[in-house]
Length: 132
Image (cartoon, rainbow, N blue to C red; front, side, top):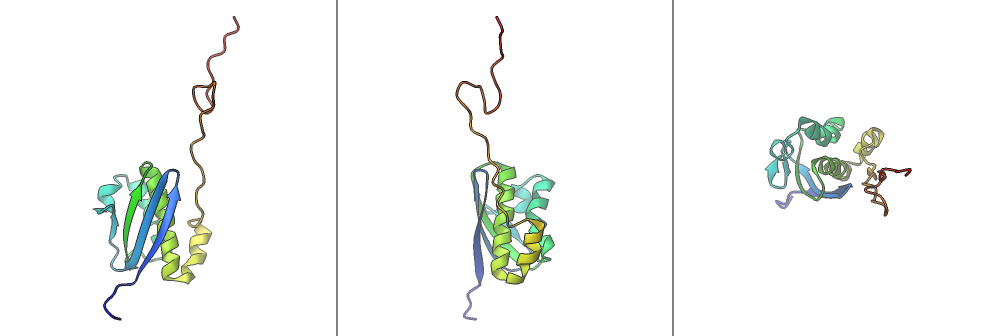
């Protein structure tokens, strides 16, 4: 090698969130928007969602992840980050595709907020009906 570190880049999306993920060989350090994973995602459940692809492929202790996340809330950001990590792991090793695909981590969650309709207070809610 000529001293350069091989990094792999992938993006993940969920709701209004976009996550840019860089994966490289390391010792399991995960950084999100220049903060540690525990510092950025306060909830244990969100950390679990993000680490799931790494646990499935048994690469939790062997790769470092640097990510930038924009838009949406914490739940959408964790989902986008999970997709981005899964896509980047495939670039590091193509053999990891089968377990990630089986676990459903390579499918983008296309659910989004339903739009508000005219003549109504929200997407589904209706104004109170008055007979007289």
